[in-house]
Amino acid sequence: METLLLLLFVFVLAAFLGFELIQKVPSQLHTPLMSGSNAISGITIVGALLAVEHTGEMGKWIGFAALILATINVVGGYMVTDRMLGMFKAKSQKKK
Amino acid sequence: MEQFINFAYIIAAVLFIFGIKMLGSAGTARRGNLISSIGMLLAVVVTLMKGGLDYTWIIAGLIIGSAIGGLCAKKVQMTGMPELVALFNGFGGLASVLVGWAEFAKDPTFSGDGGKIVGVAVVLAILIGAITFTGSLVAYLKLSGKIGGAATVFPMQKIVNAGVLLSIVVIGILFVISPSAGLLYFLIALSCVLGVLGVIPIGGGDMPVVISFLNSCSGLAASAAGFVIFNNVLIVAGCLVGASGLILTVIMCKAMNRTLANVFFGGFGAIGAKQDIEGEMKAISTEDAFYVLEAAQSVVIVPGYGMAVAQAQHVTRELGEVLESNGTEVRYAIHPVAGRMPGHMNVLLAEADVPYEQLCEMDDVNPTMETVDVAIVVGANDVVNPAALEDEGCAIYGMPIINVHQARTVFALKRGQGAGFSGLVNTLFFRENCRMIYGDAKETLTNLVAQFKE
Image (cartoon, rainbow over all chains, first blue to last red; front, side):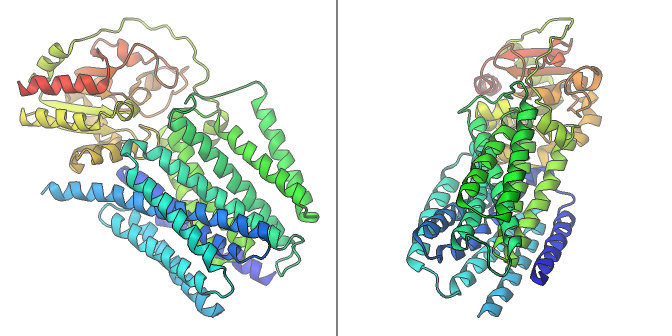
């Protein structure tokens, strides 16, 4: 029970922090912010890694599927965000 | 070892926090993304140090996932970004469902330390994750045009949705009290259904809201999965994403002057009330349009989803360039909800190398609109519909728009005479100062550019 309260505490603090972090975002960054944070939500990958250890056929297969999906989310999300932001950057550099 | 891993998780969480913070401003965004990816790498690596994992399976999973994700990220065209983001989002949601499910498979009676709390967390992870998954899939199908983008409504829709939600709550409670595989499958299935039901009544123009909302949900699902396995880093990172996604959702709603509830339950765009409008739509040839543009001092280009569909962003930039070399001041006015995801137009124009300085936000452009000689509307519709300002009975009344109707002349590039996405007739097209240039936007613009070059 104590652990749970601690985790809930962390959750609440993180929520407030999240709201504080991004108050004013210029609209040209809306898409990168979204796909970049989408990649972060792939943190489930940690849960998936731990799930693969489970003994029993069923649990392992489920964990394996979760791992693949979360990895797609993480790797794809970060790469596509970087590609997008690269375009933004190249442009402002070109503009002397 | 356990302590070391937990300590590393804290560092990873800090990296995520910095990463998100830096993503919020233009100069640091790319580094921010890199920093958050380092946080992710750290989290994964230290997790692998935990003993007793099955590395063969893990390495196989990581390789397969990286290959698919990397390929998608490399191959995708910028016009396909909304679909891809929706798809990735859906995968993240499904992964959270599976993490919840795997925990149940490991400990079917929730007899571990967490007790019933784990059961509650499993239910939440499955519910939110499954809604994110199927909701994102429907959004993906709509965005990629595989199913119609319009709102799908059927009789008693709200009652059906409420019924499904209620059943989920009841089954969820039963599952926590006495866990069983049958109830779990039922829970997963119903949550998936709810995701579909929740998104089908939302039309394409509201997609920016839906996408950012689903993004927020995928974060919350990860957070719930964190409660399932009592893992700090999942809770923090997921919650950060949930909060930032929610902020983006609210920004999008504000840009349409609607509430989130209205977007989800309004069934907007399904009803096409007939309006009576005076005047008629007047067409203009590209030749005549060219003469007007040649004489213009100041031009504002307003892109919309139609530009993305026609893949016209490059030729739009070309037109901007020839106009500039002709001594005209050129700006691009971007409505916050133009397109199908937040910031959609910015991404497309950035891909086409439009200088950052020329992209203007709605609030900066509107006060200067009366001094603009020509406003060129490229595939935008509702975001320039003056009915939003004037006609109280109209469905988008109150939505801030780009006031192109105040410009001296408006050229609207449009494929045909049909109504826009919302099903509303755009009163702009009937104005005295508006001229329609029919045809594919890309062809029309290419034509105009060619005439400038002659």
